[in-house]
Image 1 (spheres, rainbow, N blue to C red):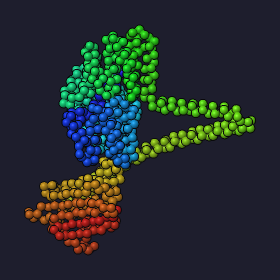
Image 2 (cartoon, one colour; image 1 turned 90 degrees about the vertical axis):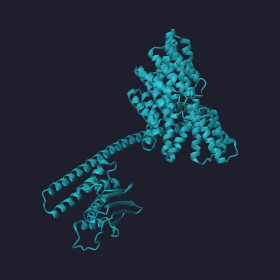
Image 3 (cartoon, rainbow, N blue to C red; image 1 turned 180 degrees about the horizontal axis):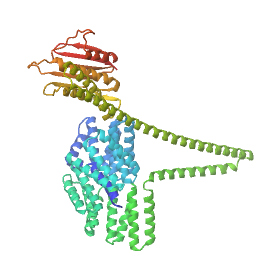
Image 4 (cartoon, rainbow, N blue to C red; image 1 turned 60 degrees about the vertical axis):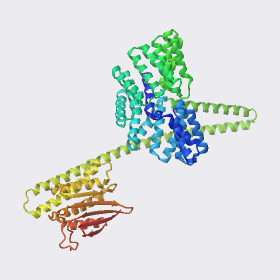
Amino acid sequence: MKKICITFCLAVLIAFNGIAQDAKPDAYQDSLQAIINGQTSKVERKQALFLLGEHLVQRDPDYAESIANDLLENYINKNDSGELRRTNYIYAASHRWHGDYKTALDYYRKIYNYSRLEKDSLDIAKSGHFIGTINMYLGNNVLSQNHLIEVASIYNKLGTPEQKARINNTLAGFYLNMNQLEKGKDQYLLALEQFGKLNDSSGMASSNANLGLLYTELGEYEKAEQHLMKQKALNKVFPTLREMGFHHDFLGLLRQAQGRLEEAYQEHLKALQIRENLSSTYNLCESKLNMGEVLIKLGRYPEAISHLKDVFKYDEHESLYQQQTAYELLSEAYEKRGNHKLALENYKAFSQLSDSIYSEESLEVIAEKDARYNQQKKDAEITLLSKEKELSEAKLSRSKAIQTISLIGLILLAIAAFALYRLYRKIKSKNQTIVKALKDRELLLHETHHRVKNNLQMISSLLNLQSKYVKDEHVLEVLQNGRNRVQSMAILHKNLYVGEDLNMVNIQDYFEGLIDSILNSYNKSESDIDLNVSAKNVTMDVESVIPIGLIVNELVTNSLKHAFPKVDDIKPEIHVTMSETDGNYTLEVNDNGIGIETKSTNKNETFGQRLIRSLTQKLKATVDIHTENGTRVSIVLPK
């Protein structure tokens, strides 16, 4: 696995940056340059400079950086965060394509931190994708994973299909770095499928290249060859030297695995010659490593050692993976030459780097703090010695007292720090207990709603069964109405236990299920009646929805039973609408039937009418009934 982890990360870069821009003809650059040099407005020149800088970051990073300087000095508003971030993206990309990952990361972090401050999710994902990918190249796996998982979460909710495909492609590379080959393969196959649906040639080329390398590692050479040849064919759609460099390098690794060493050498040599004329020192070092490996296998040790030593000349990217591989291969080359001393030295360096590759960041922080502390300690000792020559016995005693007090203070600080740490651990433990309790409560609520729904369904079924033994039409109607009311509450609890929120109900989904149930109970279908529901984006708490569901059940049932006598020229229509304002909810149920008698007394009220009156009073709602062109019942509920 000493090669595949590094090279897979590089393959991610093809799809991550895309090659569609490389396919644009020079006429595109010329047209932008004409706008910049012509008699155009400042706004037009600024936009042209942005587009040209973004277009040139791969082709001419130095020119792209000079364009960013021009934008920053003469065009953009420093208070415009969008323009400032767009300029920083050009700076970051130009340094990235030079292989200067440290500087590129500084720019991407600025963008990322500002985007988090502004809560701009898509820009958090965009900059975080770059940060996660570059840290993957450098061997900072924990930091890389934090960003890539965050990006995937954002894109799963807000991203375009292209963004989702690209983060899947990058995550596949991360899994392979962690030696999770099967998981990485599944992720690459998913990305390839997604790129295929988008007809994205650059993305498909990247995924095929990565799968070719993966199957090489797994020993499935026929599949590896097929994918690498597909990559080559796709690269012809958007031909660039950078992508051909990847192709020759990957094909060289396949030939090495097949034992075809001379062919492997020729492929790696082609990749090296291409990359010597490109800006990225990171990719150049990849070719140097591959050349070193194949030359060792060919027995050409001096040439191999020369290439491998070159890897340490470039500190712009400081890739721990590349350094680790270089030390390992140098150890092998020196051993085969018989220089066991140098072989041992390089192997020790390889082992030390391997042990620390997952904690390099923390080691750097520890070393920096230790050096600062030692320097401060030395400075204090020098100052103390110089003062001792000048101070009297009394001042010396005072100095000792001060030292004693300082020591006591340090001890007290240490005790306080320990107490704070114990408190932190205690709070953390309590928080974990609370989280578990909340999860258990949520599970219990789901189960409660499920059981309530099942019980109500059972009552509904019993009422339905009982109705089959009833001959009296009036009693049958009473049982049917009762069954519908029970069913309205059962549907509510069903929506709650299948939904994500256990306290709030999506009214659109609830009304649709309720009305379908009412239609079924009266053996009606969409061909018999047009019944429309409009309540999108309206949610309400459970306690309010129960009486509202019963009201809608009564009103729709009443329309079905009484509003439409058998008249051929009327197409029955019922509309149920729920809307929301700042202070109220408004429920409307209207039909195009014959209308109802609005004047009634408590003595001749039906049970349904009394139920509606009782429920609206409970909700403190106002009811308005119109009987022109049918019946429209409007109920306004205060929040």
